[in-house]
Length: 323
Image (cartoon, rainbow, N blue to C red; front, top):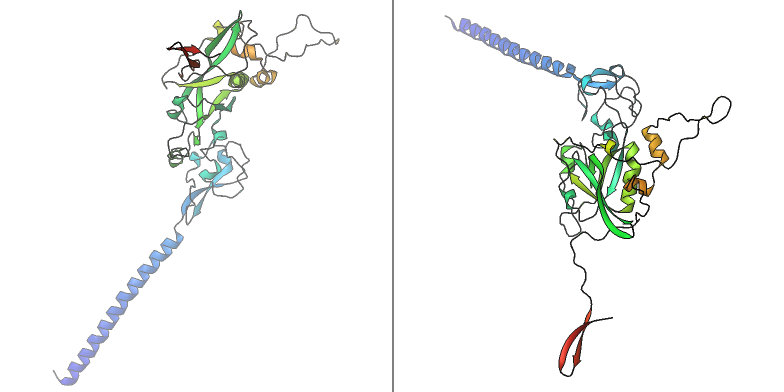
């Protein structure tokens, strides 16, 4: 092979190698471009409000739709079924991603069931059980108060309200996010605080009884077992009479009917009608001497010993009670 032929062969080989390298690089760029386009077009499903959702309105499927987002907002729902039936604590505007912030699962108001109210108990600081009770537990509420019967003063303790659901203890909330209830409350000396505030869920018709009991004496809460189902049989005991009586029913002629038809009162009606102190604490007992003051101390403290003085007579020393 002549020298010219060798040179020509080398040139052709070089040109071929150049084309091979260019083809390889072109393929790499095309693949990267395809991946970039795929990434750019990739979207994630996010639940969006199809219409304005008013505060407190249960969410229905018609109020929602699913749209594709490049980035899923924090706390957003991706499945419509996870939102159905929830009640937002404030109005959700149309076209907004629906997130758990609209529902605030830790808020007390969102946890109160229909027909109930959230009632704040002021508990005695010596009621150490409050340190063990957590939101979501069930408790019985007892009251200790004083009453005069036949001129004999006596301290009475009785169950005022059974099986109440605890909504909050101190700053802790029922169904709050997991990390929200981890911080233990401390006093000024960095010791575990004795929590005195407790929010419980009370039937609307029974709020007056609990309010009177709280004003009258000390309240104590007792933790119930979650498996305990026994409750007092109210049909065995006298029922408290409301203060406000229903208005007399008149006939078409304007005259008061005799006898009067029975008036069915709702829970809100009973709460509005009110209840007296005696009826709330000792219904049907005829006792009108329930005292509106705090009971004697129940902390186990001894009564202070009477003051004495030392008397010396003729070399003898005696101690006599001071007058």
